[in-house]
Length: 482
Image 1 (cartoon, rainbow, N blue to C red):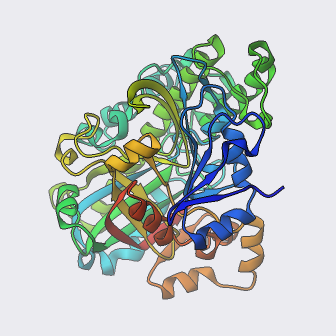
Image 2 (cartoon, rainbow, N blue to C red; image 1 turned 135 degrees about the horizontal axis):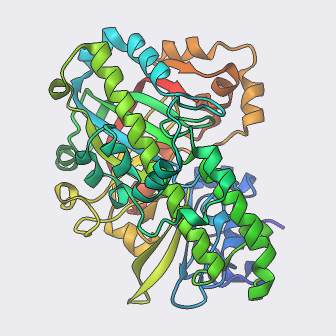
């Protein structure tokens, strides 16, 4: 049966609440007509409808324009449940790569300062930041160190000399989620993560040197320290095998105990338990630990990036001026206060392939950005561009302070490999002005630009719908792929 879609306006569509038995709220999809045609070919809208059956869900099961099929909730999905009522927490609403996210580093450099050194820079980054399946660092953390990583997050990394404490205010939640509980993490997860702090991983994770191609809003661009031709570095990775194991462990647990709470859902991949239950609180303690692992991971990678730039360019830290512009999570569940029906309510906001986008004036935004809104980092593919946006009042009113997170896949990895046969992707990208180093040919094929939607289309939808505002476009010039 085809999922019914009702057009609300040029950028909003609705799946009626009555489409599927058990739906408690409608589905809301942000897209334009062109993008919707592709979305309808995927099974992701069925997952949007399934998400609308979660106990305690409020307002809508939301899909961003980068939506595609995922595990349980679609990638590009947002659901919020009432923690004061019957609201649940669902690992499938967060995903396996807990706190997969994006960190953007700004510098004092102009593209002319790095052009002749670019190949050496990419090589230095590739050698300093381990990438690929199962990638590990020589740094192996003992039990006490792991506890510190899981409870202190990015602050632990800054204390070890990776970046500095000045980066922390420009990290979502200051780089640490309170309430992390290492005791709720399995030994297997701890073992998987022990040598993965400071590593990029595989799949769509990357480390990219970019130049600011266009500034759309000078006021916001100035607030974020962005200028035409400026060099920035984007880091996209998460909690690695550690977070994957946490998700695996708790999905198995919740599938076993759902019946105890009389919860029945159309898809067991959305296995969940009441937010306040013992199992729910255990998952949240472990999930927050994994989120802190990811914050520490990106902070450690930043330290390696800075060293690569300093050594390759032979300049001083002052001349480099590298600091975190912002760091955002896009696979996470957080307890937040939002207005529902005109009244404040505590909600468990699940963002799975969706980015927090708080508006101007919000107390959780760093003071130097508060007048313009939270920076929102939207990576594209390695051949085209990425974007910096800012959070808006519209995002807070409609989407629990959330917006899109990237381009979104349009081809499966298998289909991308087929399409790449016989092509020299390294040469094609160099012809576009992008030097790429990857851990293998398969990675290059799976991640080729055509495998993704055009992120400009995604960004245009959220900008025109008013749930994020365009600030700048970034063009890749050097890339390390896992």
